[in-house]
Length: 241
Image 1 (cartoon, rainbow, N blue to C red):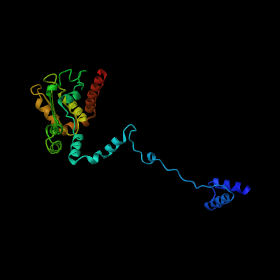
Image 2 (cartoon, rainbow, N blue to C red; image 1 turned 120 degrees about the horizontal axis):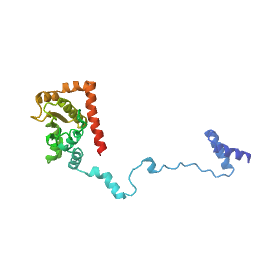
Image 3 (cartoon, one colour; image 1 turned 60 degrees about the horizontal axis):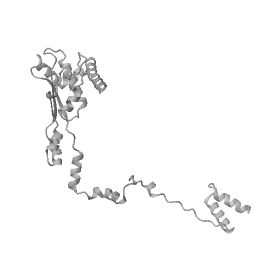
Image 4 (cartoon, rainbow, N blue to C red; image 1 turned 30 degrees about the vertical axis):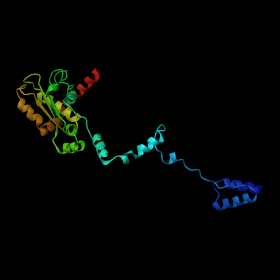
C-alpha cells in the first residue's frame, strides 16, 4: 500500500522524470489500477481561427459574402474601385463658408458682416470631381482628371474703403485660411474686386507672389495678426452655433 501511495504521488507530480513516471504507471497497473493515457482536448475552431461573422446571419448568406469578390467579373470590380475613388465636389458655397467668419483686422466684425467677401465673388473649379461626374466612364474620368487641368479657387474681396490700408492683410488672411482648409490639389488665388481699391494692381501682385507671402508669414508680428483674425473668427462662429 505504501508503494502504491508513493507511485500515485510521484505520477501526479510534474517534477519526476519521464522514466520514473513510466515505472510508477507500471507499478500501479500491476496493483490493479486502471490507467488511461491523457488525451489533450482539441481547441475549438472559433478560438483557433475567429470568423468575426455575426451569429444572426444565415450560413448561406455567409458563404455568398465570402465568395462575392471571386464571383464579380473584372468590369464590376473596376466600377466598384472607381466609385470608391469618387470625391465630393467642393463648390463655391463651401469655400465661402471657410472665409466668411474671418475677423477684420481693425473692426470686431467678420468679413461677411462688412461685405468684404461675397458668395458671388467666389469661383471654384474642382477638376477631379467635375471630370468624374461629367464623364460616363468613371475610370476614364479619373485618368483624365489626373492628367488634366488643375483645380482652382479664386476669391475676389472688396475692401471697406478705396484707400484701405489693411487690404493686403485681409487678402493674406483669406489666402492662409484657404491654404489651411482646402486639399492640396487646389491652386488658390486671392485678389481685389476690380475697381474697389486705389492700389488694386499693387495689392494683387503682392498676394499672387508666393515668395512675398512666405516672407510676410515669417514675420512674427504679421503672422500673429493673421492667426488672431482667423482664430477669433472661428471662436465667434462656434459661439453663434
